[in-house]
Every structure is written in C-alpha cells, then in structure tokens.
Length: 459
Image (cartoon, rainbow, N blue to C red):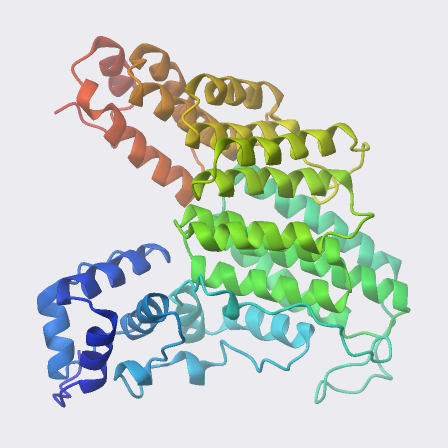
C-alpha cells in the first residue's frame, strides 16, 4: 500500500450515499473479488485505512468502483471513488475505443496475452452486471470486403481469405468446444487466445468475398464465445465478460442475429452463476427477442431452457417456468439433425437445465429424474458435464436426507472430476463437502471419504 495519507472524502461521500457501513463495503468488495477467482479478506479496518488515505493494491480500487456502481445504479469510476492514478486499466490498452471495429476489439483483447502486466489487469478486471457494459445491436457500417484497419499495412501484398480459412475456423470451434467439455476451462485457454491473435485476426483483415467475410466473422464470434466460456470456467469472470462483449461485436458485424442471441444466452448463464438473477433473466429474454424467425429450432430450445432457469431463480411462478420449459421441449422436437456445437442442443444439456429449473421450484423428484436422464444421454467425452450432473444430483439428494443414494453420485463425481481444471467443478466439490458434513459419521459417507482421502478428512 502506498503512503499517501490524504483523506479520501470521495469514498466517504459514496459510503454515505450508498448507506453502507464499513463492513458492508468490505464484504461487497470481497464478494466481487470471488467473481474473478480472487480471495480477499478486507474488513471494516481496511475501509478505515482507505478513508484515511491509504490506497489499496490493484484490483481493489476497480472492485470498489464496481460495487458502488452496482449499489447506486450508476457508473462510478475509480477516480470518482477517490483513487486517482490507480486505474491501470485506462492506460493499459485493455479497453479499446468504443467506436473501434469488432476486429480491432478482438486484436486488442487477444494481444494482451503477450504482455504480463496487461494480462494481469485483464484477469483481475471486475465483472459488471450492468447491461451498459455490453455493446448494443446496431446496423454495422458497410465497408469494402477485406479492408484492413487503419495503420495495419499494405493490402496489396495480402492473399485473399477463402473457404480454407472458414473450414479451419469451423474445425477450431469444434475442437476447442470439445476440449472445454473434456478438460475444463483451465486447459487450452492460452492456446485459443494465441490462435485468435496470430491466425484469426489476420484472416479477418485480408481481402475476401462478402460471403466469406461474413462466415469468417460468424465463426470468429463463435470461437470468441468459447474463449469467454473458458475464462468463465476458470473463474475469471471479468475477462470472460470482455470476450463475450467482443463476440457480440463480431456477431453484429456479421449481421448474425442468431449468433448474437447465443452469446447473450451465455452471458445470462454467467450472470446467474454469479447470483445476478435480474441480469440473467434480462439477457435470456433479450436473447429470445433477438432470434430471427428462421433461427434454428435447436438454438430456440437452448434459449428457452435458460429463460426457464432464470425465471425460476428470479422467483417467477411455477406456470411461467413450466411454460418456458415446454417451449424449449417443443422447439427441440422440431430440431433437424445438424453438426457443430452451435447448431445442436443435446438432450443431456436440456435435461440438466430442466433439472435446475425444477430444483428451484422445489420439485426434487422431477429434478433428480431429469439429472438421471441427462447422465444417460450425455456423451462420454463430456466429462465436465457428467461431473456437474453428478454433483447436482448428489447435492439435491443429500440435502433432502437421501444420504446413501447421494453417495452413489458423490462417488461418480470424484471419478469424472479427476483431472478437470474447472472452477465450476471446484465449487461443486466444496458445496458437496459442506452438504455431506453432517453425515460424516455414517458408514456410506465414510466409505466415500476413505476412497477420496486426498483433500477430504473425516475429522
């Protein structure tokens, strides 16, 4: 911490406006830090030091500004919170100009990986549930196909982008999506970022026919969406949100409303996982509104299932939740057999969403049956999906007193979780330990604990 001891009157004024105690602010900052995989232990004495003029280390100033923005319903910048000179993000190039092209956003974002300082700033950037943090759909300005951004060099020496680049991008989308399912978000994130920076961005700046350009932008949006999911599954939700936002810009430039809707659905899932229920529901409903009439029915099912879960989490009545589930099921029955992660919505995933919605409605029987169906239909390669399905089933059963049956799923969880690098899986592991703790003296539970001595103790 620095030795600057000028009292922070701006922070004091924000505290008064927010009607927060010192402890309230400290707890809010600690919770926001958890959203980006950081563990902070600030308390009321920390806030007293800040008010006295001590400047906390980054990313605390950014987190302080963010939690006040959430509390007050308006944007609070780091300097407005009384920390001048600490907003490294403004000078690091992490945030490009709002009027920059989608390709420029992608180039700037992926280029950060080569700079240790900027990479740390990106990974520690706070998650922003405010919808204003995201781009809005707008008619993209037309430009000649293949025109390069200003200052990017001569166009004449560039080969044209064609079907080979599109095919390669589609293969990369399938490969990285499968890798997430098989290994978790802690694997291949850097490889994907480098591929986007070193291959995809140059392809997007080459001369190309209009159809090729649109397909490249669409597949780049899909791949950037997968990058966002990797960052999210690694617990780096602020960085993930920026990848989602860049994916939205790419979908916008491709004029692809279906891709835009899928990405918004991803943002809804992220928001719900972080407890921002109103934001999650808004994103899901906006995704549904964005869908064109000719959107694939699998995508429509994908989005309605998320609406159901978000409605259940937001306290909507049973009829509204079941209506959304029915819409998801109806759309699924009309789906054609297509290939690729953005053209299909597997039954296993849909059953998992149904289980989440029914669980929030208090329907234990319906939720566990949906989870069993999810496990039956899930691909063996989807280890992450299997693991989270086993975790949710074990948690539901043990919390309702069905301990021995829950132990079966707990044991299956351990087997499929082995080797996965995923904060979602890590969180599930911690929740299960807490849920089973009251039953540690029971034989069935002891048996599982003995098998899994590493990380678990029976005392």
